[in-house]
Length: 230
Image (cartoon, rainbow, N blue to C red; front, top):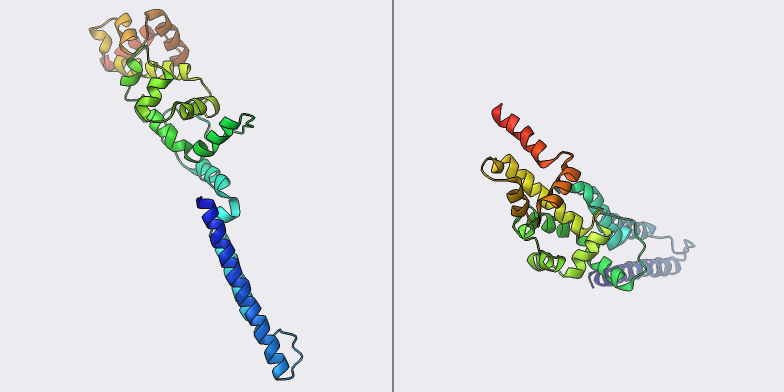
């Protein structure tokens, strides 16, 4: 609707410009005939030049006309600085070809506001509480965000390098690392920590921790203890 309104405004703007130029030409021809000159309507040519110059300036300062709304939003997103914590997993402007009509409709709704969506996802994620529920699903997450499940599913399919299940592990390991750095293990066990952050048992926690951080939970704790002692 917004784009149609702009197109209608531009149609009116160009119509007025062409009417003014036509009036200028008719007036110039009338003056030529009245004063018996042979200028062929070239009198006051500067008026037409000014009108076309005004049109050119208007086009140059109206980027949605130059690029179109979708291209403009893509260009803005590419140049926009983000404060995303997991910046490496997000694909802000992916090159995708959609054969699914439903996904094409979602693309129109989501892509122009993708940074806002991802920002909301990260803000809720790094509050950690939601992901501490081991039974938390994509539906639960979308309800917490107050964003349709189809939108969240689309984002993890096309705008993320990892699946939602992998994303859950990443957030839970971030949560575990924060607990370790706050000296949680001084009075609690690693098994307790794994359940605290949302894993059902220690084994998947251990595997995920080592995969994401590069070291085991115990090795990380020892590294943090050295820093505490220093």
